Image (cartoon, rainbow, N blue to C red; front, side):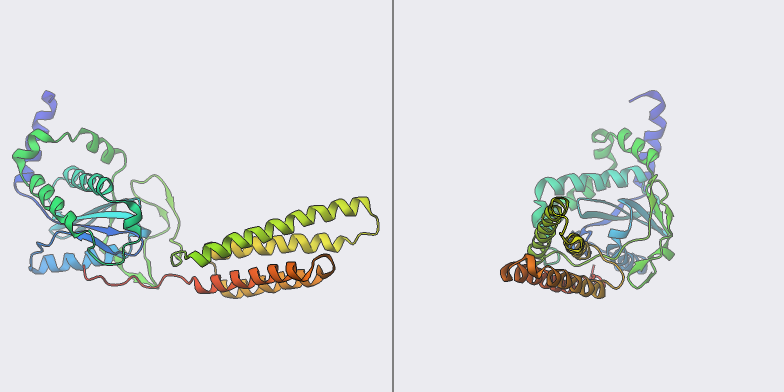
Length: 325
């Protein structure tokens, strides 16, 4: 270790001797489902208050940057998020910031190495990875032990990363919510270097019928587009060809693609737009009655109706469930 770094290291160890990590948990970002957590919560008033902040943060992870700190009196809550999973920890306010995020980074690497992300995404029970708590406890004990850390830790990389991209500082007032959205102002997140827009409403997870309807809508759009180009060729070769058929084919293509858009993204008046789009598909196919047989018409209208149903069924996510963490 360089001579200039010795005073800094001694100060870090002195601070660590007077501070500690109190608890940690692993939470799914999408819905706040707790996957694993240490179980040694203190029953003091301050710790009970921090548990409440843990709950509130877990429901807003998808709306926050990937590295954040919340200061709550004599305690700090830090977390990092990656690949749809967030790693949260509670420590005393004088615990060194660089060690806190080194601890979280170590939890993240071990969790990603140990568990398949597909299993994480499909988990339905709280604490279904409770066995990971053994690793959390061992790592917490090591980070609370100055002797073990003094010889095994290299903090230079994390110090540099935090200096270049410091964690976003969350205020307690930002945890207040209205209609499911946090009151984080539109603007630049401190330390991220990126402009963050207001959070968008998230839709429920995609189902297999939804995927099928999406693919079929794309297929119908492609068929309409191909027939539209063929109609243009016929129009150029035959003077008596009706140009309105070209318009009908391209309108049908636009309607099918817009159904795909409505299925994937949330917009205002989404259900009304889906019904109007389905109506346009029906009108286009009625106009193209002479150019298509009954089976083709039936296929296009049925796919349009099926896609409209799937758009209607895939509703915005409601309030995140309280998993009692």
